[in-house]
Length: 175
Image (cartoon, rainbow, N blue to C red):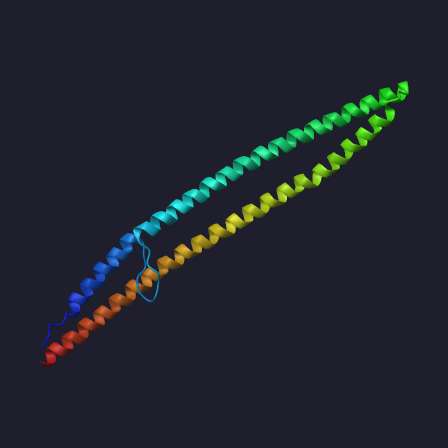
C-alpha cells in the first residue's frame, strides 16, 4: 500500500503554506486571487505614482488659484482706476469718453465672469476631497475585510486539522 501523509504532516504543510501567505500578505484558497511580490511592488509603485500625481495636481491647483486671485486683484484695481478716469473724463468731456465707458463695461463683464469660475474651482475642490475620502474609506474597509478573511481561513484550517488528528487517533485505536 502506498504511503499516505499523516494528519500531522498535512497540518504542518498547511501551517507552512499559511506562514508563507502571511509573510507575503496574500490569501490562498477558496478561489481568492494570489498576489506575488511583483504584484505587491506594482501596487506600491502605483500608489506612490498616485500620490505623486495628487501632489502635482495640488501644486498646480494652488498655482492656478494664485494666478486667478492675482488676476482678480488686477481686474478690481483696473476697475477702480477706470472709474477714477471716467470721473475725470466726465469733468473734461473728453472725446474718448465713449471708448472708456465701453472698456469699463467690458472690465465689469469680465469681473462678473470671474466670480462663477472661482466658485466652480471651489466646488471641484470639494468634490475631489469627498471622492478621495470615499476612496480611502473603501480601501480601509477592504484591508479590514482581508484581515478578517485571513483570521477565518486560519481558524478553519486549525479546526479541520484538529478534527483530522482526532479521526486519525480513532483509526489508530481501531487497529
